[in-house]
Image (tube, rainbow, N blue to C red; front, side, top):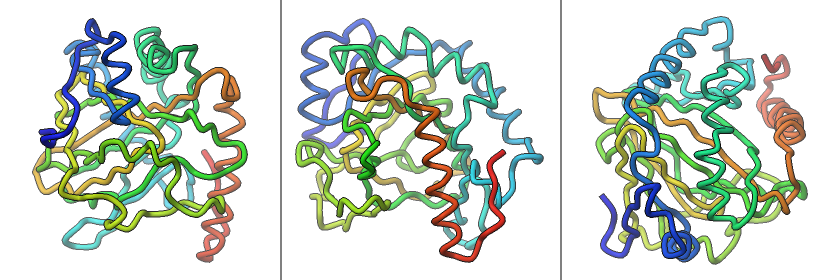
Length: 266
């Protein structure tokens, strides 16, 4: 549920000037029922297929992300980043007029796909500490935002995203050194956070400057989300390919700092 000062959700048909203003003031917006039950069933089947890609799931493959079990500490596969090159179905969603139009209305101009990932968050997976998605690279678009497509229902018990309203207006809240940073919990009023409770087919959109975090998945259910990030056309145009080339080099450097020098992208 949303906190007492948090935005109310809208449907796609209600995405009007008032909803756009709400997004700009709050830094996030929930849009209900963007995708149908049949469409989500197809995305569910595609997620099941990808989760069995043992040829790709390897700790040296920088496409893969990992999370520890919050109780046992076991390191387990959690995410493909990127994902649409593995799945025509997910690419169709990422580039669908439905999402591009939705995001374009928030921008007031054409939206361009920048980044895509599929987070599985199985039972027991740890959450993510408080952070902003924006990274202070010279090439990183300041218009960066993410549209999260819910494949599974999301709630507090299975580790739904907790968002902090209006802090995006402060811009980037970490050192501008090109590194990824967590935010200290005291940098926001944690009592004012709101959990993005989503049903399958809902979409939550939030700014790259909006602080957010998630708790462990303490349920027996998965919490699979398709994360699709965009930039405004005036903020660099189409740049997904260039971003992922730069991102791969950056990740290899970070892994090398921990002695992992045999990494690859597949």
